[in-house]
Image 1 (cartoon, rainbow, N blue to C red):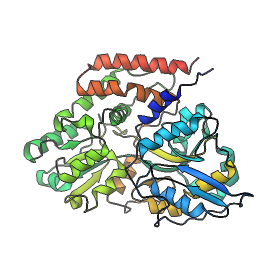
Image 2: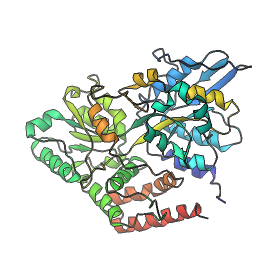
Image 3: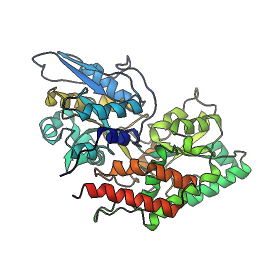
Image 4: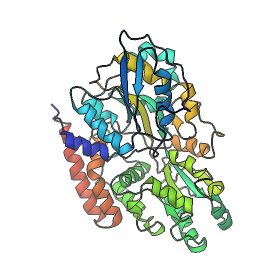
Length: 436
């Protein structure tokens, strides 16, 4: 029987989750929220529904539409503005007890297996069978549905995804006769040329914040080399493999082209480097790209161009990660789950999905085309070239537990070999808890 982890441990896991969104957004419900069809049988008594979702340009269109459109006929939805870290803490708290504070949760593919395996999220397949045709849920991308499933059961309705995209200064590239790099070797060559001849001392910007983003970067590099955290067939961690060592070496090889303080930079700091011209290339989640195109943010807005991220060593899998967001129903809510399912299904309709572009890449298919935004083509190529998700309850725990070691290795405080050994030991112990 699996032992329950203490709430404090769970909080540490969620706080360090890597698939964060895109910064502060508008208050909910916003006056600009898109009205969507939201029809349901009125409840016998008035119902308050508390929604937990962080604010970002990718998530707000869905949250705002649900709150504005579905607050009627005796149902009132409530959502207070909150950042990602705050949502992470409240998610742990609301799922920890017999009764929760929230009735609808915005959640992520990385944590769904952890919460689903412990019975904290309500399975949705029966509700999809009952209401799916009415809400057009068959039009939601099947890969995104799979990313929010565990054990063959759906636990969240996919809303939108983020994938890595490369932004670069087209004016600098044109002046130096450069093309967007397709491998890390080309990335180093391009960065070295810009550093030497382009007048930019640190031309490359990556979010490598030591407490979170750096683990996402390592996982993306490892995935591009065709390797998972844990072998899918044997259940054995892969941190002692040659690919695990190469992922470290490849990331470390980029350090001469990045600001020495890079391990203190989350995505907003990388955006700032692009805004002010201190970097000429960056790789971030696609939800950050819209901000780069807005003239009020940067005098270089018209100079930014976009491409899919490079692969680490060649091949079809890019230095990439696919982060899928969706709506989940906590098992411990006392609100009718059939009603809640209808609310979250309405929130991912074609109207709200269309309104979310280009800040989001909606799960509803056909919303993003080559002309949707300056970075749409890069998104469309990138989305199909990410390593497949690892839908296991140990994945997020391993990521969190090994993040400090990844930071130590990439920064040079720990050798690659010692880092591999420690990560292998940690991962082996975590996986063993689920094998008992």
